[in-house]
Amino acid sequence: MKSKMVLLSLLVALAGFSTIATRAQDGAADDDVRGAFLTSRPKATPKGTAKTTPGSKPSRRRPKPTAPKPDGTTSGVTGGTTSGGASTGGKPEALNVSRIGMGLTLFMRDSNGLAVRTDPTREFHKGDHVRFLIETNADGYLYVFNTTDGGQPVMVYPDPELDDAGNYFQAHVPFEIPSSVAPEERLRWLTFDAHPGAERLYFVFTREPLSSVPIEDDLITYCRDNSGKCPWRPGTDVWAQVQNELNEPVKVAKVEGVGNAQTSAEHRAATRGIGLNRDDPEPSLVMLSATTSKNMLVAAVDLIHKAASLAASSDDAEQ
Image 1 (tube, helix red, strand yellow):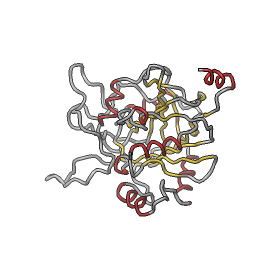
Image 2 (cartoon, one colour):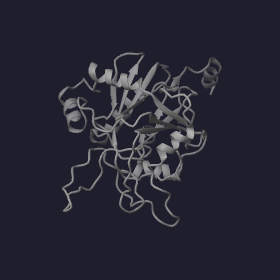
Image 3 (tube, helix red, strand yellow):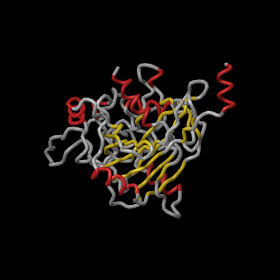
Image 4 (cartoon, helix red, strand yellow):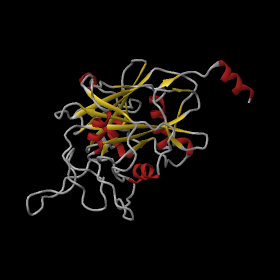
């Protein structure tokens, strides 16, 4: 099953997670960072009105260019200039996103099978199940790279067997990794195995596609014609660019709310391509470029994956 192969590659990538390795500037107020990120969400929808027209699963492929209107303008979305799909039911609200931003929320499955917000700095053990919810404040492209024990990076998103190898995001339309609506329960979560490891994920969000990184049909063709060489591995130049951006100043805000269940609005938005409004929950971690000139934002994430204690292992063995 194709989706199984995708989730297995992501599971390898997410074998361990502890802190956001970002470069927060001194004196940056959390409220200012959150406010700047959320201001490009559409305003709250009045009660009794629909937020947007529900659609099918959102496409992650680049939008096709639209023909000019009689007045010389074009319709549709362009990177970083509109609210993407975050509509309140009418025409998307035009926005001027000056600083590129990204929000990450980590959910963990509780004993009742519900997705609840969890602290990324906690320790994870064999059998724990987690899922990411990712939101951006501009239209753009998301790449996720993984390194193991400081080794060679591999690209785990986009993937030729997920979303037609697309990685296009619309502003404030969240996306789950992995999806909660996968056909089988075992494919809906990333599950920690019995082998702790030093894993690091690099979330790279850009206004325009990275020129030397294959996506969509190029990535599908590459993997088809180079059997055994996927996932794709970035070259020296691409990886140097990612590392350089990782050292750029980024403002970071952490939102409280550990233990709260995922809301129906978050689930609906992530699975049906519906934009979030300002009255919807905020991401647990918000990262915002410190300057208006940046077109790329990079955040490195580690998960703490440790072996269970001997006492816990003995208890499991007795059960």
